[in-house]
Amino acid sequence: MTKHSPFPIALLFLLLHATALTALSPTTAPAAAPTKPLTPTLPQPPPTDNNPGATDIASILTQTNSFNIFLRLMKTTQLINQLNSQLITIKSGGLTILAPEDGAFSELPPGFLNTLSDGQKLKLVQFHVLPDFISSASFDTLTNPVRTLAGNKPGKVELDVISYGGSVNISTGQVNTTINGIVYMDKHLAVYKVGKVLLPSEFFPTKKKTIVSAPTLPPAPVTETARAPEPAKVKPPSSEESSASSTQVVPTVTSGGTRIGVRGSWVVPLVLGVVFLRFLGI
Image (cartoon, rainbow, N blue to C red; front, side, top):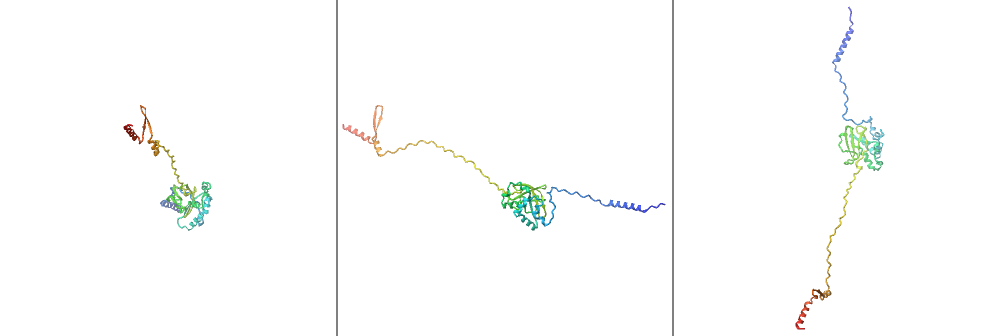
């Protein structure tokens, strides 16, 4: 009688037991695919260490060698020292810098920066700084107009910011531009790259409208009404003329001949004298 080894039977039993345990254990679900954001985000900044020296604004702007003119303005106006000091002592909130590249300054009129006073240069740089930390996802929460470090004069040194679909548009009233990327961002400082130099409307005073008056017409010519000639004034006769005229004899022409007429105040006495002489028969 042939004897069978117990090892194949034991091996077969172990295989059947392992298969049964595998069938009873739950299956592992496949990993879910990461969901895409609903709106595209702004380009992410290069990785930077979070040591205190990285918050120096000058060091940040010199990394790409594209903001030399803007950095020079910040240094000449001493604004960069003020901002760095504020970042060192800040505990909440922060700052947002809208930095134009050197190419944006080349689009300004020739010699434009030289025409600005020191106060205007400071206001120009302040106009590119927001006194709050604005992350790339927070632009759509801003309420226009957005205040800048240049002040809060209505319509003069404020910005209008519109965020839609990951695109951020900025308007100053004189310039319209967009945010083209993130230069640097930490918990208290955000530096964005803008396509144009932001010019405040305060630099461009509104010209007063000149009211042109209607041309005045020349006065109409005065038409003189024809007047009848005034009668010549008769000079009253003097005493000598009146006595001479009293004895004047006026001849009167009649059909039968010439009759001498005598006028004057002595005619009646003369006639009476003639009648009296006839009566006496003289």
